[in-house]
Length: 91
Image (cartoon, rainbow, N blue to C red; front, side):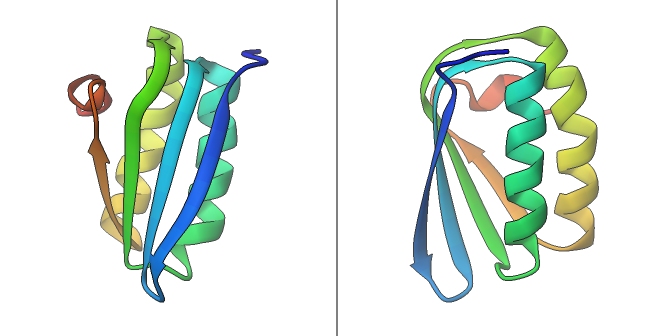
């Protein structure tokens, strides 16, 4: 488990949310982020995930996260990943 992984949540407006990630992204970080997204998806139509604060991105963490993010993205909210690691978070 990445002890230094953090998610900072900022509400842009009533229907938009920004999540700022920092630290190391591994499988436990993926599970934590999925829980945050599950909670936020009901209240937000647009969710932006900023990866600029991440130090490392673990491949297994991506394997855990991406399929679940895609299901949420198509079902409830428009999820956009930005920042220097944005490309690795895409299929």
